[in-house]
Image (cartoon, rainbow, N blue to C red; front, side, top):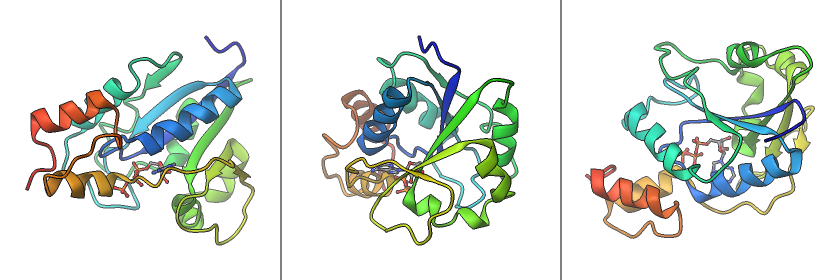
Length: 187
Ligand code: ATP
């Protein structure tokens, strides 16, 4: 149980959760000694609605984090039909004496100025950026998380599964089994 009053928020589509997500967020959680809040989104403002149901995406998150302590899979953005803005999510979790941290990839960081009320966001939480394929175009008030990123993406998993190729080692074993059993991403 984390003794300090820190929450680490990690939002995404998680279609599906993969080992790149896990490696980075668990490393940062440990570094901060924070409670982890995973926030799968319903209708993300910056992207298309995923065709995998929220139930399946949440089920895979539960399997992936089954051994992790101090974690909540939040349903805050799940039921929202309109775009879910991170600003509203932060407002929801804000509390006196609570330190909020968030982890985002450099792809998200490069689009940060398009985020609703982005300047205020930087006052509300510490944003840790993990460098992915694309370099950071501009340094806002971010903390760079120097972690060797695993070259994995959800789209890579979906593509491989659709082509009937192995996804072993790219997602946790239980998630791999779930994808195969339910035939997710099959064409
Ligand atoms: P897609 O391939 O469908 O675009 P994704 O792999 O980027 O999906 P998301 O659910 O959109 O996955 O990502 C949630 C968050 O995790 C984002 O901030 C994203 O930048 C970050 N992220 C994604 N892949 C990695 C990775 N391999 N290592 C570290 N962070 C990652």
